[in-house]
Image (cartoon, rainbow, N blue to C red; front, side, top):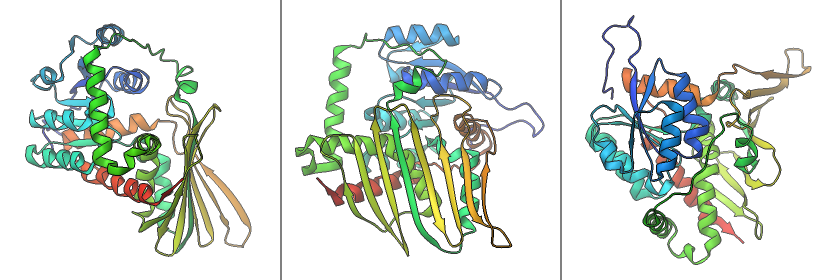
Amino acid sequence: MSILTNAASDAAPRVLRVGIVGAGEVAQTTHLPTLQQLNHLFKVVALCDVSNDSLAHCATKYGIQKTYTNFSDMAKDSEIDVVMILTADEYHAAYAVEAADNGKAVFIEKPMALTHADAQSIIDAEARNKVTIFVGYMRRYATAFEVAKKEIQSIKKIDYVRVRDIIGFNHFFVDQCGFFPAKFTDFPADSNADRLARGEKIAQAALGELTKNPRNTGLYRLLGGLGSHDLSAMRELIGLPKSCFAASRPASAPFLTALFEYEGFTALYETGIDSVAKFDAHIEVHGEGKRIKVTYDTPYIKGLPITVTILEADSEGRFQERIIRPTYKDAYTIELEELHKCVVDGAPCKTSPSDAAEDLKIFDMIMGALKN
């Protein structure tokens, strides 16, 4: 539901005042630079973090006047329209609920939540306060993704799907992003202890007996982080799987292979992080007479193209391959433009809390089928 309206349709767009919690890597390399470029739609007016050094660095670099070390104080700030939650996953649910209860629209970087209870608390807060809560699945807002979705809908029968996301460590790309993020270590001891305690509580609630094997907790974190991009996009393109036939991982490396059951076809999911500076992420759908593949590059290098490749026969039966690059506009920019429409104009939000909660069903399927 819209919390703000424009005075007239031909008026300049309303500039939303943003408060950001979390001044770390994702804030410095993606959201702060993007919001600065979108200054006709957004203005960052406040920043919250437990690190005073991070606050000082980002406030100076981006001209932010107000800083907070206590989130509750920022959530009550009447000069903030939208709270962006870019902090550790352990705080997403608590901060989202508190911000919504203070009448703020909310943007949450994925994963929205890692337990069903936390997800439901956010869904309830959205309904209770009648505010927009928007989950940051930027890959689903890419123009190429929308093109691929339309092409997939034209397929009469899907035969097979492959979802792959095997990438190098983030620092391979962040170090070359050109935004020069800075890291600081002045974290209060009690803040780190609190985060760890919250993490243990979340793991126990999500996994139960599976926490006896610490590798299970690490894998679940991988699903919530890298995996939520892929599985959320997979859901939008082909729906929720009926089940997970099998899921397997190697002895030590952070990799996962899973096989999902759909009506009439299967979907193979491969994900992992290695020491090669290559971003290998795509979703490929094989159907009757056509293959459609949407390919992603690292989002840390702004403007790298996201493309759609279509393999099919032409009207005379000859093989053809088409590569479509709809735009160089990056997915984070498109995502934030959509956030503005949702908050100001009341546009429907496809990455809502209810939608994000569906990811947890897939996580449960994978963990239930896990071998090794």
